[in-house]
Length: 265
Ligand SMILES: Cc1cc2nc3c(=O)[nH]c(=O)nc-3n(C[C@H](O)[C@H](O)[C@H](O)COP(=O)(O)OP(=O)(O)OC[C@H]3O[C@@H](n4cnc5c(N)ncnc54)[C@H](O)[C@@H]3O)c2cc1C
Image (cartoon, rainbow, N blue to C red):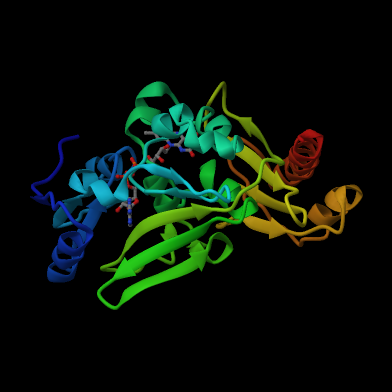
């Protein structure tokens, strides 16, 4: 289906992008367009103005600090993360980005678009929750930093409010992470997924079982299964999996992700 007519702006700074967003209630940020353009074609979203972020250099790139902290611009694509020497400081990032969809989607789709879309079946929301990412959000009132576990607030909803932009994703140093998923075919949409990190305390984030990633902090590896069973989850049923089956997968995948994380040095 063709797009309906839409205004278009391509600012070169965050300040200019925020000004366009403030000027038009119906304006929407455009990153890689892999989700937004499709939902516009389906008329599920109908912004008046697209604010294309592709001209803003400050929103791109990956910096690695001396202490191992990664600072990633939201306009960095999955392919750039996979190929980045700096991102290898936290190897799970490139490993999981490489599992997303196909090369065309990875070449255009950005880390910021992936998390701002907050599709509950996406790979990156649970991963960033498990590894303790922090999200910088900018708006007319200035900047604020939100931990990933508070960033995802509902299906397709995040802490980024109207007129605001995600401007940076900060990821602490660490290597002992894991990720496991059951997907629809190779590199397909997740039916269930789980990310784990054992840098510091054990953190597990489950995807596809609720509207937002479910963060669990079991006492130790032997408690992972019990933590999933005790989390009071009521996953959705659909054509791909019943609620009971998703719950079963969540437990299996949480144990798998935690085991992978623990086996890493
Ligand atoms: C065929 C197909 C299969 C896919 N399969 C998977 C999969 O298996 N797993 C997975 O994780 N992903 C999957 N995706 C999603 C894909 O990886 C992208 O992450 C996703 O489409 C959004 O990224 P984007 O850069 O294209 O963002 P866009 O589509 O441009 O934007 C998405 C949303 O985020 C908002 N946004 C973007 N950047 C910002 C910002 N900086 N600040 C505020 N709001 C912002 C936009 O306004 C929009 O609402 C798939 C996509 C396609 C088309």
